[in-house]
Length: 184
Image 1 (cartoon, rainbow, N blue to C red):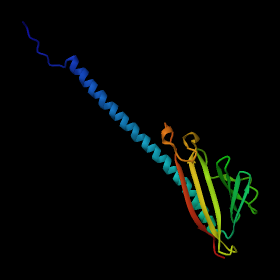
Image 2 (cartoon, rainbow, N blue to C red; image 1 turned 120 degrees about the vertical axis):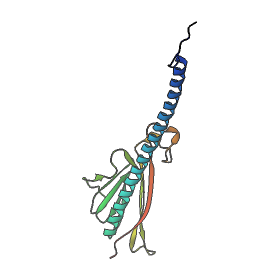
Image 3 (cartoon, rainbow, N blue to C red; image 1 turned 180 degrees about the horizontal axis):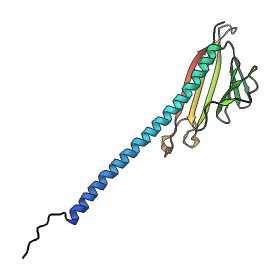
Image 4 (cartoon, rainbow, N blue to C red; image 1 turned 90 degrees about the vertical axis):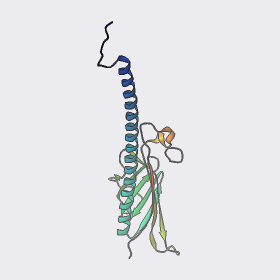
């Protein structure tokens, strides 16, 4: 009987090697996908925080240059004026815009949207602060809540619902600050 001297791999050995390689590749792809998902979620959160911070910093700068604060509400729109710079928060449309107004009651027709596409303002509150006798305006307490524009991922309390997250990401940021007016 003649014996064959094989120097290759058997089909069983090749199948086992391919199965192990495939298993390792599945683990690598899943890990990479999760890593990219976490990265995108972090970027979304960072952009939301950065946008809220930019708006608050701008309001603080304008407040330091102003000597008067006015507030007014017309329907679903709240007006907040620092000097003659007017902020208009529309709670029905979840928008915040900035324009100019001398009386703080009529929105500026050329108001500029501050949050842009992909984001919404869930809440904006500006409460003027005065001295004890209410004769001198000292500044205002400002609260701003911005979220990504994914209503289906938000709960009734304007928080992200992680159980509903799929390929989209939800990010909600709230910033509170107290601003002071320029001294007379």
